[in-house]
Length: 344
Image 1 (cartoon, rainbow, N blue to C red):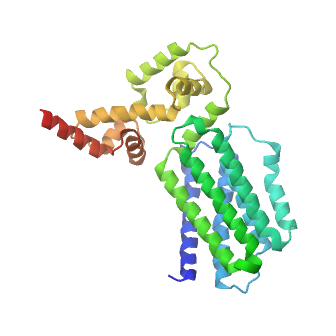
Image 2: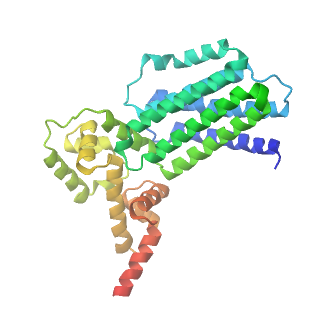
Image 3: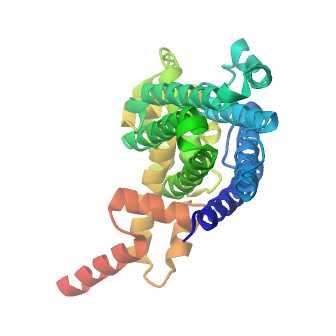
């Protein structure tokens, strides 16, 4: 495969993924993000797509001056977009600081002021600093979820990729060449989209679980005047006897209302009493219900069992079941029914 064809494939893949993720930001109902983060996500995705298109145009005509002011401004703004997107996930709602509001204007001013010779390295160094700061915010939440190391490793990988591309930007004028820089940065963007797609498939409820961990990690104790044991017992009753987890639209706010607690109080109660976040707590009950239904109703389809247990899609059911049980629902049913026949 030629270098130019590989570049075309990476650009096409990146633009397609950018459009797909933009549609997710626009319509996914479980993506509980503040408007600043949604705006940042759109800016980042548009910036990455436009950057890749610029790379393709430059590769088609290497004699064209590169980089341009427009290209530099886009690279600066996509880093700000990434920062805004993940700040909305990794910090409490409403915790937005003045300096963060000023970042887009500062990035644009810097993009217009810095000499073009240094513009790309400076922009990519800024992107590296953004990734490293986000790693620090993720690390603060490490104790909240047992699988948290996955997200930290992904952000650390993004930071390493940003550092590598920044070095490429420094070497581009005299050593690597602008074409080498274009190919390196295009490959990094395509790899980034591939990793994000894999992460969303592996952890489909990543955003709500992260928001939940943030609420607990940053909150002061809100249960000083609450009978924790009584509330924990009532919570178990709601799930074990009334089986409220089988309601697909069940939310933290809805359960908090049933208990007469605030959402922060319920998050803290679940985390301190059971050592998990609310989303995982609900999923555990749904999986246990599904396990029983798979055996008690052998003629029911696996999908219908998942829906009856409270899951809203086949993918979320399979991921949660495999994570908790160690095998997919169909395999679990076959193994248990075969063991029952053998013992009977």
